[in-house]
Amino acid sequence: MIHDLVEIDAGDTFAYDAAGNEGRELREQRAAARIFGLLPADQDAEFRALWDEFEAQATPESRLAVALDRLQPLLNNDVSGGGSWREHGITRAQVLRRMAPIERGLPGLWSSVLAIVERNCALGYIRPDDVTPSR
Image (cartoon, rainbow, N blue to C red; front, side, top):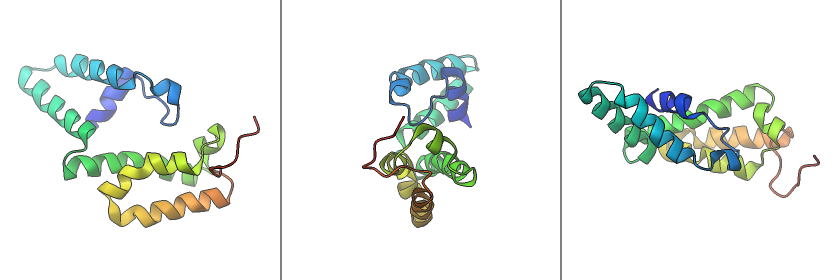
């Protein structure tokens, strides 16, 4: 949730938007400093440490949190007929790169993630890696 508060302030950029994600890290650093700086010093330090931990993915807890953060949009796209994957012509490789933290943070779910991706590829909701969109 702390991660999402920072994204609200910095602007939550579409995960697959390369141009929109340029400068995202700096925007989020500034947003974290601004938001947490509004708090008393002890809370500022605690929340900033939790946010930094999430961003670094250096602990089992942070890897789990990032995995869950990535799992939610995968499930949303799956149950919505491809959702933003279809709308933006997202490829299998893009989805797998984006979902990679799930393999590390929730390794027991990785085979399910792959099954979801393959099913959506077969349905045409995720583009194959070697096909150029016809836009």
